[in-house]
Amino acid sequence: MRIEVITLFPEMVQSTARHGVTGRAMDRGLWSLACRNPREFASDAYRSVDDRPYGGGPGMVMLAEPLEKAIDAARTALREAGVAAVRSIYVSPQGEPLQHRRVVELAAQPGLVVIAGRYEGVDERVLQRAVDMELAIGDFVVSGGELPALMLIDAVVRQLPGVLNDAQSKVEESFVDGLLDCPHYTRPEVYAGVAVPAVLLSGNHASIARWRRKQSLGRTWLRRPELLAARGMSKEESELLEEFKREQVSGDKHQ
Ligand code: 9D3
Image 1 (cartoon, rainbow, N blue to C red):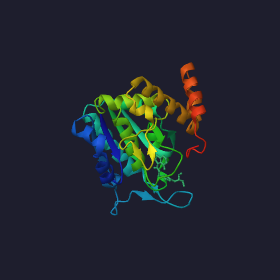
Image 2 (image 1 turned 90 degrees about the horizontal axis):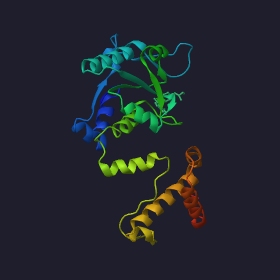
Image 3 (image 1 turned 135 degrees about the vertical axis):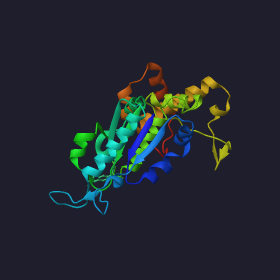
Image 4 (image 1 turned 180 degrees about the vertical axis):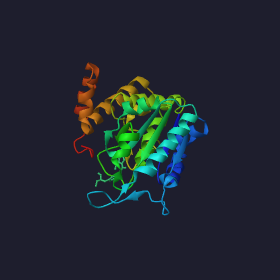
């Protein structure tokens, strides 16, 4: 997959993407990243990329022309690399909230253009002319589109074939079944006076799997009940959840 990012901070995007899972996948040729800076396409002597909003008000708006030229350059580069269908995504607080199913759909595309905004937003006419989709990463505000773009890219790249190893993919699949993850423990057996649950030391893999499932159901019920409602439960799962409720310690810090 080829990803192009339109950003005023290309070093921020490139350097972050080179870390960890996404960086290794890049080294292995599973995806590539190119950045286009609208400033390189600015037409005035100051290389302006923003201006004051019509109608007044605080803040600045990204100029249409340098932004659209940068998007066009990205599309052209993808087309010349043999990418037929290019999807362009503007990450913005007004976008559709990003969910796993959308991530999976985007991972099946051969090329993406991701537009990261700065200032109060971008000129609406660019969105009409050059953007296919507007995505948000959550109902909170961050200072610019680069971190949301990187989150989207990270989520998409981990879905590409060969990026995760088999063990990692299995864990991923179990999360994708709509439940939160179970608690994890490693050495020592007792830390700060708190012991690891005995079942995890038992060596009984069926009991361990059952305990983990029960914890996942219980934590989802406690923290994200709407996920359970959306997904439904089998008879076995309902029984496991009832067992979790009976075992629940009152005063659990997550309540
Ligand atoms: C005062 C109006 N603000 C909109 C809520 C202005 C504004 C704040 C922050 C405009 C852009 C930004 C920068 N944020 C993003 O580009 C962004 C974002 C976000 O802030 N929250 C959740 N998802 C995203 S995706 C891109």
